[in-house]
Image (cartoon, rainbow, N blue to C red; front, side, top):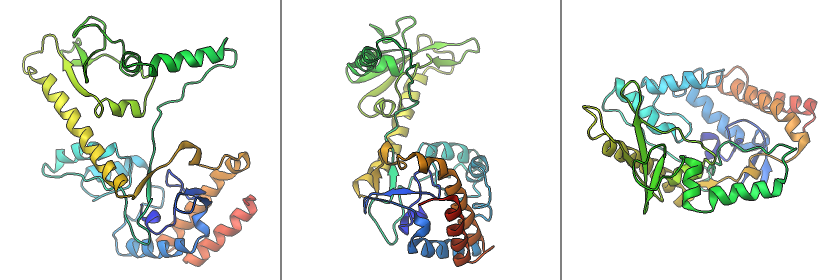
Length: 312
C-alpha cells in the first residue's frame, strides 16, 4: 500500500514485477520509475527510525507476520481483507479492548485507483480433454448452478430441501433468507453440513449481502439454546463490517476492481522470466531499504540483472 501511494505500483500480490496501471492504462515496471526512488527513500527512513519491522524485507514468513499482529507487537500490516476480523479475534484473547480497522488504501502522490480488489471465482473447475460433449457439459454446469436460486445454493452450500430441517438437506430457501440446517456430531457440537463448493468466490459473499442467513438446530444441547440466533447475527455483522470497509474505498475511488486478465501480461516469454524478475526486484528493495546498499546502487544492480535475464 505504501508503494501504491507513491505511484510505484507493484504486482497484485505485492511482488516487484510488471503491473497494470489503471490510471495510465499501460503495463509498468515500477522498478524503472523515478517514483520508486522516492518510495525507497521514505521506506528507508521508516526502517531507520524503527517504524518498520527490521525483518519485513528480509525473509519474514506470513506466519511470522500474523503472529506479530495477533500478539499486539504490530499495529498494522498489508494483508487479505478476510483477516481483519481473524486478527481481531485472536488479538482480543491477549488484549480484550483491542480492535482492527480495515484501511483500503493510503494516498500520497496519487489518490485514485491505488489498491485493487478482485472478484474471486473460487478454485477453477477443470474439464478433461477426453470429456464427451464438452460444450453440452459446460452449458449444463452453468445452467444448473447459475440458472436459479435452487441450483445456486445447491452448488455453494449443498442440497436444498423443501422444508426447514429436512433430513440430509443442507439448507432451505425462505424468501430472501437461507436457512442452514445443522446436526449434532458425536462430541455434542453443532455442525453445518459440509459444503460441496461447486461454485465459490463472490457467490459466497452474496450469502450475507443479497440474502440473510439463519440456522436450524433441531435439539440444541444444554447451554446452546440461542446458538442459532447468535451465530446468524455474528455472521451477518462480521460480513457487513468487512463489506463496509471495502465499499467505502470503492466509493471514494481509492480502490478499483482488477480483472483476472490484467493480473499479468498474457505473454509466455514474460511468464518464463517473471519469477526471476520478482527476485531481482525484491533483492533491490531489501538492499535499498535496509541500507545494505545505496538506492542508486541497488537499482543499478537490478537493471544489470534484468538485462542478463533478457527482459525487454
